Image 1: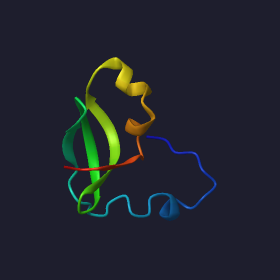
Image 2: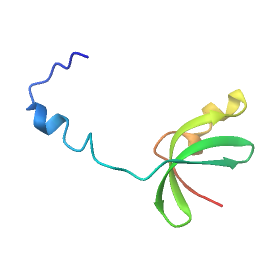
Image 3: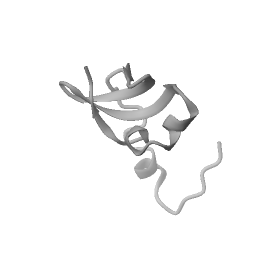
Image 4: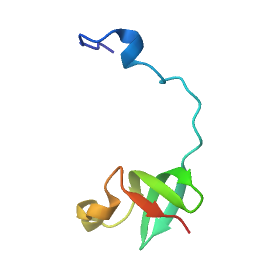
Length: 70
């Protein structure tokens, strides 16, 4: 991989090797989502794993959205 940047490499890659909590999968309104756990009962959308095509246009399922996890 080639990375062109004027920033120091240590700053760009800072935290890339840090341990993180494993992502979890949850089904919400028929859409299977991969979520990053934030706090108990909440998760941030990482990606859509499975669902109908129109779910990709739904703003609440876009990456970075925070959703309640049941």
